[in-house]
Image (tube, rainbow, N blue to C red):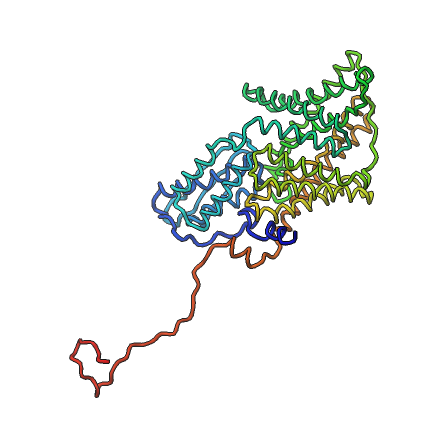
Length: 487
């Protein structure tokens, strides 16, 4: 097992695992050729577009854009990455005007297969020095390729993720089945609404309504059906699935690493989308109350016990795996995501046993996930972001968010605000922990095998002894002038 784990974490590195200074280009482009320079800049900003659309932080995106440009000989570049745009300006010398380009990110796509493919393309540009034309052709093929799985597979993955989270929260088989069914309806409904051009805020409102309505109906029909189902767990599972698609990690990572403008924009989007979820759940609760339905009483559940630890760890691993599958991750990345989810859930549950609180427990677990993601991404050949985001998904504060919302609706303002601020603190702790874990993974000393697999082969200088050709002395010269010496 130790050998298998060593192969998993010590074989290769993803490009984002080490952001280093670009090596001298093997085939630098002609800086006086405007067309060639423009093509190289276009490749660089398109790489940044895919990364930014997938939720990568602004600093990592700008470093990769600068890295690709420098590989082609544009070593002095200024990169400005904002929430939805990338501006790149390259210095070409004192006698030539600078070359610049701009790319606006028109979409948000959590397609981890596309992100991993761009990561491998960046590595090829660095190692093989492929031409800008070839790189642009390969990049176009990556961005226009269809998803590796059918959309129904993604719907199944979202639904299975909700079922796994409900088990992680303490639910049984019936709770998991209800969470599965309601989340599948949410995904298919939002896909239709997205095709109609409905803004994402209202899509989250609809998702919140669908998450809450079946749970409350089942609670009111518990006596005729003879079932006892805690609806809060069903709603919390649906809320967690809706929260998982938001750029929580990227927004906090930008704030920590020195990109406050982009962090503010991402965080405002996060607040608006979360507000849509809250509005949807609140609407469902109010409508049900107006119709005379009985609303469930939310109470604080007991801390998880050690006897339930194996089941909860497996549920955390399953939820991370299904999230990665829903985001079209490659098959070899699914195992790494599952291991990250299991590690995060285990550390969180063990920390809660020591009564350190959910915020500190979440930060500790997220640090482990970020560190493990940075290591495992080397073998899986996928960016650490894939493992990190999937790994913290089981820890998102869906239940705390629902408890706070329910308390506010029930006129318990102080209790509700406390729960909402607790959910906010947990979210920030998760994002900060992932950022710290990824930084620790990048500072780990890599074995020589890793360095040989991940670095560019550079020419080496060796001292060679020069052997001078034999030249006969003047008194022994017997060859004619200009002829070859004898012997």
